[in-house]
Image (cartoon, rainbow, N blue to C red; front, side, top):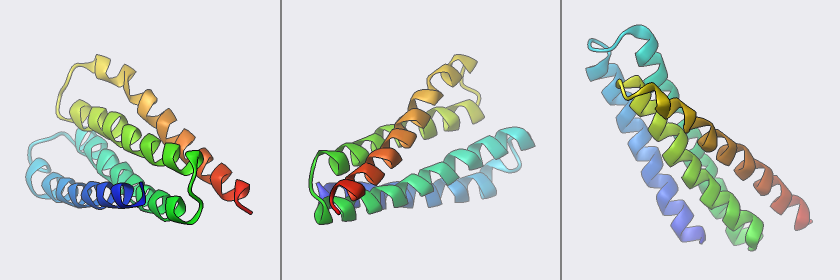
Length: 123
């Protein structure tokens, strides 16, 4: 799992940088300021959780077990759902996408809590 999570985290980080550059160089002139801020929020949370996935990879190597594995998968699911729907909303998708977004946020929170639990359980 550690190599998978590290690789996916690195790719998520690269895509977050590309999305940020796309937002500031292409979308800045095309989106209203509040939509651009929403797009940037998605890129920022994607980068945070790319780094979280790198931490989960490290933790999976150091403290192998279900907690670190579940945390990594929750970070991936959260990035796909939270960041994906926020990107989509900023680009004009139907507002009902906003109803899906909290599932990704809860995945992020659960991932962080499981990572903490995995660290505590290994001491």
